[in-house]
Length: 161
Image (cartoon, rainbow, N blue to C red; front, side):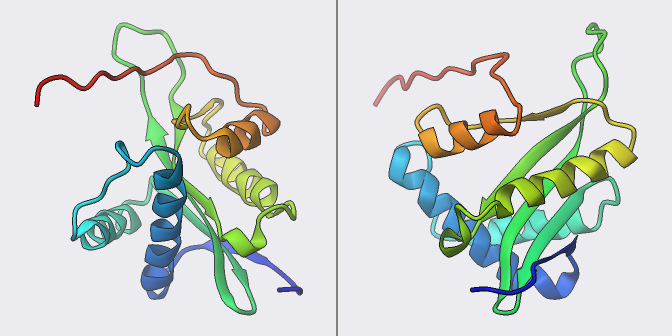
């Protein structure tokens, strides 16, 4: 687990390894909120199709962190816009972000985030956004360390059966 880490754009050959990182991320989130993060039996297949679409869209940014053992981090994002009445800048929206558990706590997350932010900045985006579960204190703490702050709260209520 020592050695150089390379940060680079994902390629099609990374697909399966990215899928494994996504599964790890979903399992991590499910520990905090099993009701919200329950997955269909074919969730990975569905998500990999989404990944294929993202890889085929040049506006999407998909970065990986690669160690000697393989991929150990994933950062994905895309441009986002507010509804037409709002006078807000087009922004970068971080859709997926995960560091393999055995690599957490070494600064890799910050480095991967900075690489993603640099890509958005090169695209002329001056604001970054993301969604983070309020039930996940580790992720909340990480994103606040990266300078993010809550600005809107999305709420839910389960109704019926």
